[in-house]
Length: 58
Image (cartoon, rainbow, N blue to C red; front, side, top):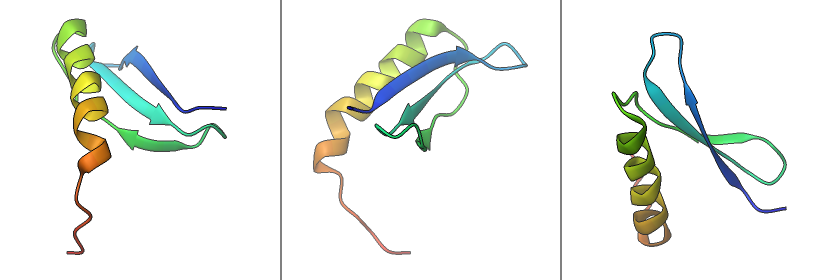
């Protein structure tokens, strides 16, 4: 099963998304966004940038 993004509204009314692995485990969560379209843009940014993201140990 492939992973999925879940888009939801939090208790304060902000839009957020979380990325879940195929087994249902949450592997990433977003900041709060003031609009649904901004949250959808955040999802698209993760889709675009994550494949080439560098791993940096801090």
